[in-house]
Image (cartoon, rainbow, N blue to C red; front, top):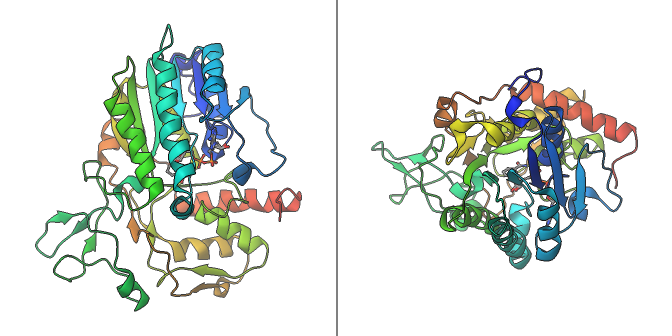
Length: 368
Ligand SMILES: NC(=O)c1ccc[n+]([C@@H]2O[C@H](COP(=O)([O-])OP(=O)(O)OC[C@H]3O[C@@H](n4cnc5c(N)ncnc54)[C@H](O)[C@@H]3O)[C@@H](O)[C@H]2O)c1
């Protein structure tokens, strides 16, 4: 999508966005309203994300409500009468989900089921349901064995990690070679978060409905606007926050953890396409860059961008059970649709993230 190309299909289109006040949702809302869409946001302004006094400047109708509150969500849907629904509202912390499985399940699974039931009951149900899905459904993702076979390994062995062996091993105990994960690799989530997000996909597939869905499995999204106060998600925002405070940055394991960092505007472009492109209807797509970036490299880029000493980034050998070693998407099938491709390289995206984080700090807008 090019910003100055007018998308006629979005003119006047009634779009209902759950979680539309969040990182991706707020930027998506601006992109859609700039195209003339009529957007209603449904969001509970979760304190973990927005702080105690949310700063909102959204060019759309906002209904403050929880996806667990069926009556309020039903009234909001009825007032909006949407032609397209974009479902972003979720609890998003992988580690936190292990500690709070009930909350994660209620919001991500029950909330989605309720949304589907409400929409199905509408006199004029929407024509599309666009879901913010995640690469977390893949767990460790795809690896190649010595004999060239593609496998999805089980979560890594904690004992080996305690001994500093962080690589992923096959059943025969030989190290496996990571490869980008394609969309047809069988899901094997390694967290409650990943399982709850996979259940959202299953709900869409297994509840007969009059709409067609578009499922976008996002990789690690980053960029301006990602909560600098949420300690549970958004590793680059967390690093930027620590660096701005003059704190050292610690990178887990041996630093060789790889992510597919995709810039928020590229993700927004994918959702805009999801709202109107026929080529995406009924499909599930990886939304990433297809390129691995070591977390250590990304942390150093942040320090460099801030003019700080890269030596303040260190690898501490600590690890988090359930962390994924190599999370990179195979995006060939998405590219083949011809309606989306990533445009922003990590160096440029990180520069934009850092410029924004710096301005938030300078304006005193980041809570302690
Ligand atoms: N950011 C990423 O790297 C990433 C990667 C993969 C998938 N996703 C998915 O994208 C979606 C949006 O993520 P984001 O990064 O913008 O997160 P975010 O936390 O910035 O936005 C989520 C929004 O949902 C709202 N919300 C949370 N719980 C709610 C509830 N119970 N009822 C109503 N609203 C609620 C929050 O207030 C917030 O505004 C999520 O579904 C997430 O699983 C994000």
